[in-house]
Image (cartoon, rainbow, N blue to C red; front, side, top):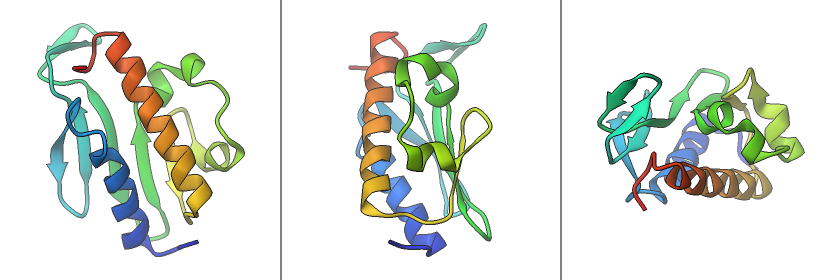
Length: 126
Protein backbone atom coordinates (compact mmCIF):
# COMPACT_ATOMS: atom_id res chain seq x y z
CA UNK A 1 0.00 0.00 0.00
CA UNK A 2 1.21 3.47 -0.80
CA UNK A 3 0.20 6.92 0.39
CA UNK A 4 2.80 8.67 -1.78
CA UNK A 5 1.00 11.23 -3.97
CA UNK A 6 3.45 10.91 -6.88
CA UNK A 7 3.27 7.10 -6.85
CA UNK A 8 -0.54 7.15 -6.73
CA UNK A 9 -0.64 9.66 -9.59
CA UNK A 10 1.77 7.62 -11.71
CA UNK A 11 -0.22 4.42 -11.10
CA UNK A 12 -3.51 6.04 -12.14
CA UNK A 13 -1.89 7.56 -15.23
CA UNK A 14 -0.49 4.12 -16.09
CA UNK A 15 -3.95 2.54 -15.85
CA UNK A 16 -5.34 5.10 -18.28
CA UNK A 17 -2.37 4.74 -20.64
CA UNK A 18 -3.12 1.00 -20.85
CA UNK A 19 -6.19 2.06 -22.84
CA UNK A 20 -4.33 4.17 -25.40
CA UNK A 21 -5.70 3.35 -28.82
CA UNK A 22 -9.31 4.22 -28.14
CA UNK A 23 -8.01 6.91 -25.73
CA UNK A 24 -5.37 9.61 -26.16
CA UNK A 25 -3.76 12.13 -23.83
CA UNK A 26 -5.09 15.66 -24.21
CA UNK A 27 -3.06 17.01 -21.27
CA UNK A 28 0.11 15.44 -19.94
CA UNK A 29 1.78 17.35 -17.12
CA UNK A 30 2.35 16.32 -13.53
CA UNK A 31 -0.40 18.71 -12.44
CA UNK A 32 -2.98 17.32 -14.90
CA UNK A 33 -3.17 14.20 -17.01
CA UNK A 34 -6.30 14.04 -19.16
CA UNK A 35 -7.55 11.48 -21.67
CA UNK A 36 -10.24 11.70 -24.33
CA UNK A 37 -11.42 9.61 -27.21
CA UNK A 38 -9.73 9.57 -30.62
CA UNK A 39 -12.83 9.94 -32.83
CA UNK A 40 -15.43 12.66 -33.31
CA UNK A 41 -18.33 12.20 -30.93
CA UNK A 42 -21.25 14.12 -29.56
CA UNK A 43 -20.64 15.50 -26.09
CA UNK A 44 -24.04 16.82 -25.11
CA UNK A 45 -25.21 18.86 -28.10
CA UNK A 46 -21.69 19.64 -29.30
CA UNK A 47 -19.49 17.60 -31.65
CA UNK A 48 -15.96 17.20 -30.25
CA UNK A 49 -12.74 15.69 -31.65
CA UNK A 50 -12.77 13.14 -28.82
CA UNK A 51 -15.13 12.72 -25.90
CA UNK A 52 -13.71 13.53 -22.47
CA UNK A 53 -13.02 10.36 -20.47
CA UNK A 54 -10.92 11.06 -17.35
CA UNK A 55 -8.36 13.27 -15.61
CA UNK A 56 -5.78 12.65 -12.90
CA UNK A 57 -5.00 15.67 -10.73
CA UNK A 58 -2.68 15.43 -7.72
CA UNK A 59 -3.58 17.56 -4.69
CA UNK A 60 -1.59 18.03 -1.45
CA UNK A 61 -3.46 15.29 0.48
CA UNK A 62 -4.77 13.01 -2.27
CA UNK A 63 -4.98 12.40 -6.01
CA UNK A 64 -8.25 13.13 -7.79
CA UNK A 65 -9.50 10.89 -10.54
CA UNK A 66 -12.23 12.70 -12.44
CA UNK A 67 -13.91 9.80 -14.22
CA UNK A 68 -16.67 10.81 -16.63
CA UNK A 69 -18.07 7.28 -17.22
CA UNK A 70 -19.05 7.14 -13.53
CA UNK A 71 -21.42 10.00 -14.38
CA UNK A 72 -22.57 9.01 -17.87
CA UNK A 73 -22.89 5.25 -17.33
CA UNK A 74 -23.66 4.91 -13.62
CA UNK A 75 -26.24 2.15 -14.14
CA UNK A 76 -24.08 0.13 -16.52
CA UNK A 77 -21.07 0.27 -14.18
CA UNK A 78 -23.26 -1.03 -11.37
CA UNK A 79 -22.34 -1.03 -7.70
CA UNK A 80 -18.68 -0.18 -7.28
CA UNK A 81 -16.44 -2.25 -4.99
CA UNK A 82 -16.39 -0.90 -1.41
CA UNK A 83 -12.87 0.58 -1.71
CA UNK A 84 -13.86 2.57 -4.81
CA UNK A 85 -17.23 3.57 -3.37
CA UNK A 86 -15.47 4.95 -0.28
CA UNK A 87 -13.19 7.12 -2.46
CA UNK A 88 -16.04 8.44 -4.63
CA UNK A 89 -16.99 12.01 -3.77
CA UNK A 90 -19.97 13.26 -5.71
CA UNK A 91 -20.93 11.48 -8.91
CA UNK A 92 -17.64 11.13 -10.75
CA UNK A 93 -14.66 12.25 -8.64
CA UNK A 94 -12.53 9.77 -6.74
CA UNK A 95 -10.27 11.10 -3.96
CA UNK A 96 -7.44 8.58 -3.67
CA UNK A 97 -5.50 8.93 -0.40
CA UNK A 98 -3.92 5.49 -0.48
CA UNK A 99 -3.61 2.76 -3.05
CA UNK A 100 -3.19 -0.98 -2.66
CA UNK A 101 -3.12 -3.81 -5.21
CA UNK A 102 -6.82 -4.60 -4.75
CA UNK A 103 -7.84 -1.01 -5.45
CA UNK A 104 -5.56 -0.84 -8.49
CA UNK A 105 -7.17 -3.97 -9.92
CA UNK A 106 -10.69 -2.65 -9.20
CA UNK A 107 -9.81 0.61 -10.97
CA UNK A 108 -8.34 -1.27 -13.93
CA UNK A 109 -11.54 -3.29 -14.30
CA UNK A 110 -13.69 -0.14 -14.01
CA UNK A 111 -11.64 1.63 -16.70
CA UNK A 112 -11.65 -1.36 -19.07
CA UNK A 113 -15.41 -1.83 -18.64
CA UNK A 114 -15.99 1.89 -19.24
CA UNK A 115 -13.94 1.87 -22.44
CA UNK A 116 -16.06 -1.04 -23.69
CA UNK A 117 -19.28 0.79 -22.76
CA UNK A 118 -18.15 3.91 -24.61
CA UNK A 119 -17.17 1.79 -27.62
CA UNK A 120 -20.61 0.15 -27.65
CA UNK A 121 -22.16 3.63 -27.70
CA UNK A 122 -19.92 4.72 -30.59
CA UNK A 123 -18.09 7.26 -28.43
CA UNK A 124 -14.67 5.58 -28.71
CA UNK A 125 -12.93 3.77 -31.55
CA UNK A 126 -12.84 -0.02 -31.38
